[in-house]
Image (cartoon, rainbow, N blue to C red):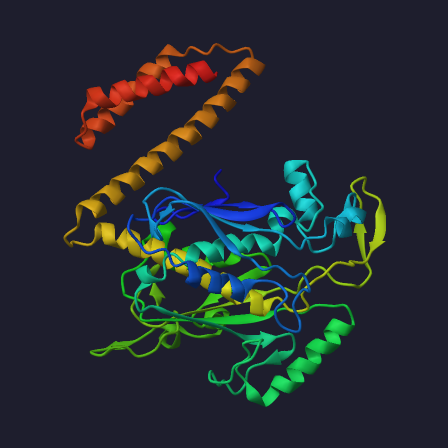
Length: 433
């Protein structure tokens, strides 16, 4: 599975670990001739970087953007763009005592159970530092989104909830309530002094979003946004519109009625049937407390020994301010993907570049499908070898080719051409097996 790649029509592949040499991203689907927004991307990285604010980790990283390929004379060439951010202020020795310990709340034990290898240095790919790639990638698509406006801010941090919302009130926590801001800061200072951490809930409001984005069943806009947001470490839940409170409403109150001017209410958060309605798109998501805390807790070692563990590294008391640019980046990627796909199905005139972009996407999906088919063929080969089965199965091959020929005719394809392609695939499968 391509678990480090994201999206179909604006695709990215990320790489790197928290304590590795660098974090990076490769983007293949960028048109040539676009002025590369270097300063804009660097600004986004600055908003996310560690060491900002009173309750952030003390790890100091400059997060200076390096572009290795795909740019010439400040413009995109149409070839893959590789962006890199070197890690400089990591202290791997601070994690030496964790070589055999699974930290409570972290992905240490789940990664070990899956990969059977334990990189104890700062969480590896499960670290929040991985998100820098997403933020860098999002800087290339701002213009594609047009006048779509994305606003994200916390409405709850720990026991504090916004009661008098004032978006003009700005601070390092992005907390828009003057009435309890001072008390909130004191509360966070106390949590920090205890060596503890706290989470919260963030509100997302997306304005000027066109109607018609998203697709039925498995490509719903809310489903794709949910996957994007929950893919961020520490996010444990999401609700659209009135969300879980809809459970207490009757249908006549939950439905969004309409008049000649449009929707009267927006209980569904601007999405119906997985497709945007044109109303403001709203959702909330919950962020759990940072797992690394300076408080003793029970855990186990790799050999299943029960011990007491206390973290001693550099950690965020409250991760919420730093998660905002990451969430915004993921929303941009989802909307860019949705807009790109919508462009393909709209009955509008297209340029030669647009048509080439469409066919390049289809070619990419074909290659992904062939790659997955090859992996399954390898598994079949191992199974046959283990159970002493022949690699030849003439009846199945004939049935398969007949079925493919029938489907080719159904879809008005050249059945002989499709048959040739499948014979090549079958022969390749036998070689693998």
